[in-house]
Amino acid sequence: MILPEAFLTHTLRHHPHGKAVARILCAAIQAVEPGAAVRRFVQREGNSLFVNGQEYRLDEIGRIRVLGLGKASAAMTSSLADLLSGHATRGLLIPKQAPVQLPSGFDLQPGGHPIPDENSLSAGQKACDLTNWLCESDILLCLLSGGGSALMTLPHPGVSLDDLRVLTASLLGCGARVDEINTLRRHLDQLKGGGLARLASPARVVSLILSDVVGNPLEAIASGPTAPDPSTREEALGILEKYALLKKIPKTIVSCLQTAPETPKPGEMLFERMQNVIVGSNALAAESAQRQARSEGFSPVWLGDDWQGEAREVGRELSQRLKSASEARPFCLVAGGETTVTLREGGRGGRNQELALASVRELAGMDDVLLVSLATDGEDGPTDAAGAVVTGKTFQRGLELGLVPESFLNKNDSYNYFHELDDLLKPGPTGTNVNDLIFCFGF
Image (cartoon, rainbow, N blue to C red; front, side, top):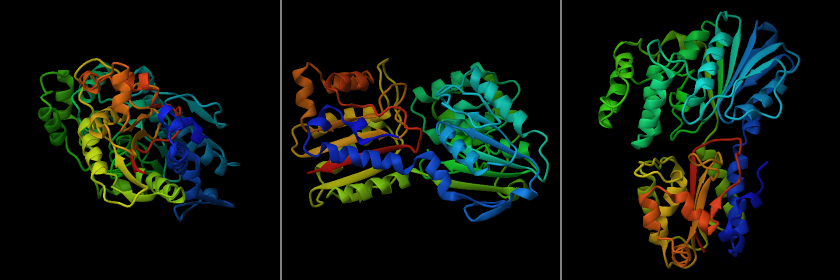
């Protein structure tokens, strides 16, 4: 369990409200703890399993298969396995990191993240093997969370793993939105975009989903392996054209998008035996943070969970909102979403750290303000930080150490800027993943 002390950076250790801020951040994470999220929506009464109110008679089900996929899959799977105690269950767990303990009857296959690797390919084949040959009396229970798109892959014939890795790296580097990346993934993979549901048919399929995508569109979370796909191959090709990638990526990608079978669409009979349930989201984490903020004496203000775009631009926009805030102090503005970073140099950082770095100059010299940008999974980009903390004093503290924020911003080197100030948030992997949260405090 993550404790408030894990969030205490230099600034929060010395700020008069620092411990209260840490408790607010901690409350957000604890609200979307994966095991608890599953238990809120799934109950067991004798031989009946109730999923969001829908009953499944275990004594009338043939084979039970469980697939856990994503960064939060270990805790979600463990919670469900406890509820299925006493029933013969086979399962496959595809996490980013191996859990300490694996439920009985489960196979383990960690995948690669954020770029799919050979382990991701093995995970895709094992998922295919798990769900093949299921019949109408069987049930497939899926536990899906963020990171699943990279952790499991089974590309269409003709598309190699290297092709997918080049495409993913190109999309991440040019600042493509996560929904755009997932649109392409769905049309290049046999399991994504409803592919897993099609493979498991005619069995019943139930998916419990911890959302890491703005707005919680089912087709985008882990690239929607059990959800209908409203997008088309033509739209996927349009994304490549938008970012001028058509001639920069492997030709096999373009060929696949022109010839591969379309993904299953909304309204198809395939989804009549499907139940998808959102068990945790960015908004749920934000609600808990606001309750904690209120209990700490702050007036909470919700700014929505649809913040997207370039991290540095969102950082400047939220800084301006903080500077012009008319709310009675002390207040806590809460925003959710997922930004992107267009790579310009070879620095180290992530979208939350870059958002925070962009706010340093904006908030310079202001008294009694504080901004925190937090990745709820505890991992911001390819770093061991979850985000960073900024106050009106950060700019001057940096200058005294010879640190000019624009120099680091130009190199996408936010990690090293905040590392020197000891203001990186490092709670460690949280075991959950529901996008990012930004907190703007006025005291």
